[in-house]
Length: 379
Ligand code: SF4
Image (tube, rainbow, N blue to C red; front, top):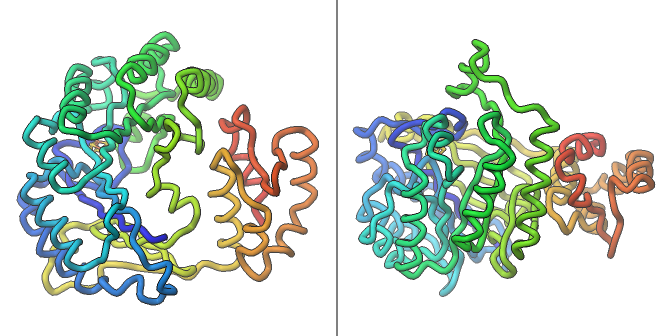
């Protein structure tokens, strides 16, 4: 199963915490589609090295940045371009990321007419004071309205993102954010702990002492609240940060966690095939230069990289990693697995890991500290 990710590197303004590559320069936007056309013409045979049965593209994800800052007519051009160059089955998961302030009735209907069947919306909080602090462009009312507009336009698969773990967010507000979101009944919810990413406004605030992050204990309580409220509301936690109603797991992101091949298009996008990873440079200016074809770099993963990646991506999922899959991940995997038996045994005996149905998993109660657990298991 293969996927395509398209990175739209434009935002109308930058949120303080955001480490994703995007620019606010509007002039360059008109050069993007011709540049994408050039990249696609170079990459249209990307999946040809795969066995025929694995070449079918099952998911298309247009993310960013903010794809919804582009007019619907530009998105239509992009979709036509993709469909002319890649073969999609009759039904495939087609997601686009949107910001609430871009959603009007006409825009939502246009997205629907493009065949988009899943919308992922950055809500982040239902407290306007939080949204202002994050420098989000929307307010809570706009998020609610956007949700209703998308439903009216016929979207039956909506995902919403929330952020927790920042000092302004009290436990009562977090509970209220979760309950508000549940009342809108999205099919999918992603919740991320605020982190201080490089080259962000938040990093600059933190470096001059104007932002003190929440302590781990407070974040851990909010994470536990997230898990318990969403579970009670019928959402299944299928990955550390992802929850969904049954049947609505993100197929595109699941492809990443399964290490399925994907082609990334657009500045900053990553691709993965065989054991090769490639990434386009973070420069929309260079990407749009007609004479420049050196837009990416790549690396071949070592056996250790492959083993560690299979372990890490598997353990982030609630279902865990299948031991058979881990052992087959590369030639030296049985040796690596043997090397780390002491740690596995220690964690299994203390309940930090569970072994069930041929899989090793982290119990949900330990997800919050999963990074450390996974690091200890790396070879
Ligand atoms: S969070 Fe989204 S809208 Fe905000 S800067 Fe990042 S990509 Fe743009």
